[in-house]
Length: 180
Image (tube, rainbow, N blue to C red; front, side, top):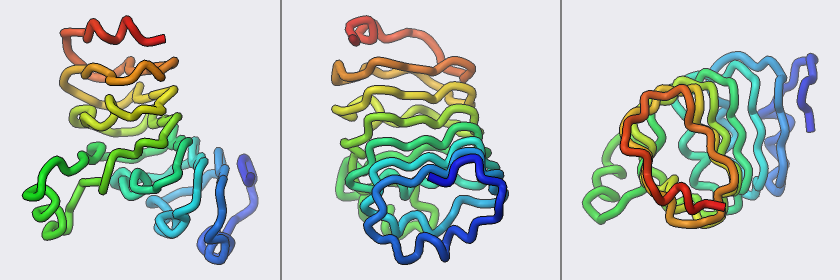
């Protein structure tokens, strides 16, 4: 827990030997610049909070490949781009391996319980994998630039949903009223 610290932190050096780190909270540390490239090495992380920083650049979609990640909070940053899709067939998997701009994740991040991406510059449609995460309790996608329709959630685990201040269109899915 290093949230709201004002002193300079050499994160790559600090975390480089912590391969078994499970939780990392860096809320409001006033970082400036691109997404920290050392994070994909933290494959045991279950909770990651980088909210209220000034991280920018392309959305760090590699985080969604973390097997055990249950809590991801990137609220109030300047991430841009679209959320990645999950490959649905062998052609898509093959073409993603040959593309340097791949925006695919290996599989559905099925352990996510909290996905908090509010107040960024994310755009495009909400990818289909978001609607089929079995453990998802809270989804925060408000204050972005998402377009298209809202899909039907396949599980009844969702208890909080924020989609306001986007460019989403009708029809509103009727199945959403059956959520707890």
